[in-house]
Length: 561
Image 1: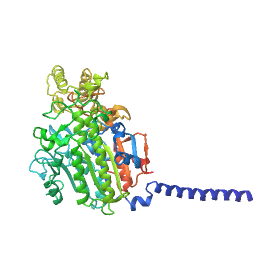
Image 2: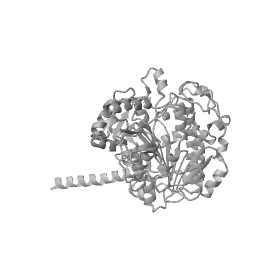
Image 3: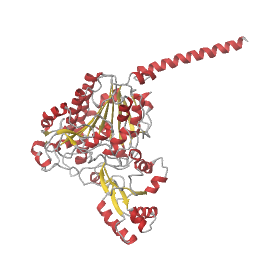
Image 4: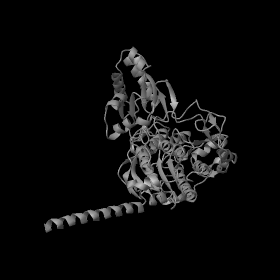
């Protein structure tokens, strides 16, 4: 009997000790910045700031690290959480799908934004991802404001935040590009603003959000803040310190109209008229500075983060993409743009500390896609690389269709490396659609510049879990995507031989940074593979709100535990 009671006492002591240890672990989690159950619902961040850096490869963090100050990228990473192995998990990798995927928690297969532009097989016309002629421009007399999120098929994390608080949360989205502002704001944003270049240099919007620009925006535009960036773009550090980039004058980089060579300094005032006036700022780091100027004005004038109801400020830095397209991955221009972006991040964090309060806000930073090195440069370095010539592909396909089917009308559209076939004509000719797709696929595999080909039948019926096939399937939308999908070889792009682009399923286009910082974030990092669709679910768990209604991602536990 004494043995029985002795054992019972041991069990009770173990249970009590285990309870104490669990309580201590929970307290330690709170001390490290994590959320307890009560914290999730009772003490969320007053403001979430979502930052998307357009065309940011992951290695721009590591390659330019020694040039960054202590209070920009290094503060975010040193005090926050870094995803080192973060990917898109779908293709095509471009701005529209990227922003949509970050904020919806799903991929184009779910949210329907399959490209920046695509061929619409139901209207037999090309469409733009946020184009909407039913809307009117606000703040301009041009059509530069005729945009809305009407083609986005699901809700966003910003929509869910608005719904959760009965529309009392304020959501403001800002970007140089219209699609970089419209898609993060979702369907219910209080406002989305984008930059109109040309002779205007002002910030505009759409009737989807408002009937007239708020007084503070009108006053901001009237002060003409863009004018102060009409200056010479010089390297911000000593030229000899830019050892992480190639020579300044190389044949792989594009130029502004009126320039003889792609070299510093870039005299913007002298180039102004020939390059669209204020449009030239988009392709310089000053476009990012102007974006932050406006975002900080919105922060103050809209009172974001001023009360206990969580607000959301979405900022997309678009100029990194314009610079990258013109000059490429290896240019001094792209390095200088990121050095200056680091300074803008420091300015943003300083203002958030001041206006919202350090420890009262949460920031995430990621990209909408990566980018390929310039193939001409790689080829000269002895690395397999080249170009996809779509006009030649169309010409050869015309010969193939004429010989095989007696007509060249079967091909109706060719966008985002997808062929769209005429299904009515196939029925009239009594052709089996999948047989035709397969014949097109086999024909395309014969062409230079084509590496792999898949049919829509394979995308619909297959169940791919890894490799290029899975990436393409995640980007395939049954209602909107094409009949045949072609994939060029690695380091092959459809572009000019100066500058570069993106859009492929390859690692250089899919691997981007992921940083979480601030309230509710456990400092640390992971090399576990995470995906762009995981960002919105992670935020939803952190905020204690519903996931976006098409979400297929998973919350990242390392950020929250």
